[in-house]
Structure formats: structure tokens, C-alpha cells
Length: 121
Image 1 (cartoon, rainbow, N blue to C red):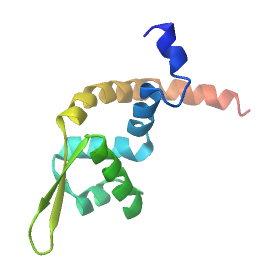
Image 2 (image 1 turned 180 degrees about the horizontal axis):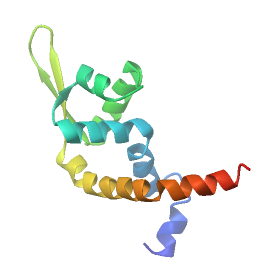
Image 3 (image 1 turned 45 degrees about the horizontal axis):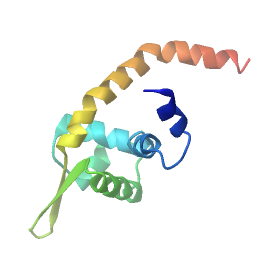
Image 4 (image 1 turned 90 degrees about the vertical axis):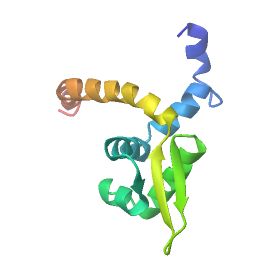
């Protein structure tokens, strides 16, 4: 990345800021990892699998992910209607990068926590 791109990232219209802010929010990451590990899931299954998320927040998160092309929503006509969610190819292409970020976080967690403690003494 060159300096111009970094400088442009300071502006809200920046595509990097726009996309990363959506992908890196707390709930989107958890839903991505949940769907990656289990494949296709129904709403209530996702809700049970993602700790602490409210139904409203899960609905909002899934809608945002669908609008961004990260989740495919399939309605199955039945009584009651069934809705299934699956990661798209775009989301699957993102997962190796997120796995690297997760690995880095786990590797450096102890060091980062120790540094934080220095500032609270």
C-alpha cells in the first residue's frame, strides 16, 4: 500500500474503511466463523451458536452481510417457512485472511495484555 492510499484511508468515503468497519465489527466476525465451521444454518441455530447476540442484532448483522454479498439467504417454502444462511464465495475467500488475524491475535494476546497492565498501575 502506498502513502496516498494510507492518507486516503483517513476519509470516511474510503473503501478500505468502509469495508473493514463492516467486516471487523464484533458480531459479523462471530457469524462468519460460526457459518464457516458449520456450513448452512438456520437463524435460531446461529442465534444459539453466537454467544450474547440478541435476535435484533443477529437480524441486522445477517441483513448487512447479505447486502455485502457475504451471506446467501435461502427461503424454503414450508409451514413454517424455513430460512437458511450460507457463506458466499466472497466470504469464503476472506476466511483465510481472518484466520491469519485470529492466529496473530492469539499469538500476541499475552504480550498485549501485559503492556496494557503497565498503563493501569
